[in-house]
Length: 304
Image 1 (cartoon, rainbow, N blue to C red):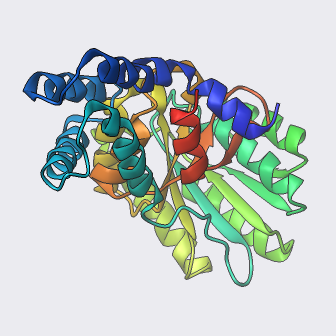
Image 2 (tube, rainbow, N blue to C red):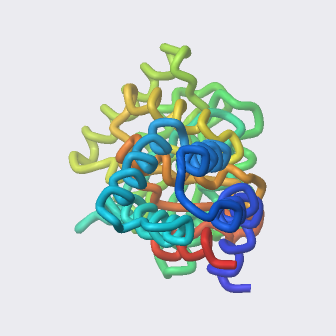
Image 3 (spheres, rainbow, N blue to C red):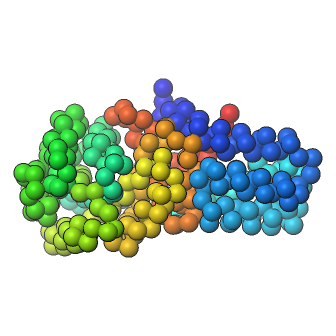
């Protein structure tokens, strides 16, 4: 099965809570009235598009009615497909690659979102592109995080720079940067501890890691990627808002799209936070993480 078909399959639950309900709405009303619009609003919110983004879409729909772009319930779905496609297509989604030296990717996110596993899949993706990859095991707080990353490093044939559990994460990052430079690695991916906004010490540690990176490679990190779990819906957007206060996030990796009816959260992240979704995960396999493509996502969301 190709990745597009996996994506389409992973959005099955979201389609049932979103696209199919819109189709039923179109059939159920002869004319557009307030009751019809109220039901459309409920459908958008139930798909975890988010209240803010739902209100914006509803404003667009009402404006479309006034401009005679929407004349009947049958016009609602093509209008929404076009508008959602425009939202998903805004912003820069492509991965940032360094012009010279190693590309440094700093990966952050709370525990439980599949951070270390996703880093392993990222390593595999770049190895498949014939890139040399080094992984930095800077999550020294969580038990077995280092072992887990080393397992993924072996699978992806990527070197892992690690110290012992409880070691200084910034020291691990320093050694990994030196290794990436001396070995002329293409990609350095740094795993970090699951950081909650309430844990000031962990946020301080993140700032320390930034300082170490900047000292060794002034242009790095080239990406700071926040991993979010799609199954948490609006909580993922809340997490993203909190993390933006602690780090200059360049993009989001959205995992576990295959296990949720809340795939509409992608639209909310793009519209509400103006934050690009750069990667999406649609399964447990090593190749089930791929760069986000707005057109493919919109097509997979609405295609029967």
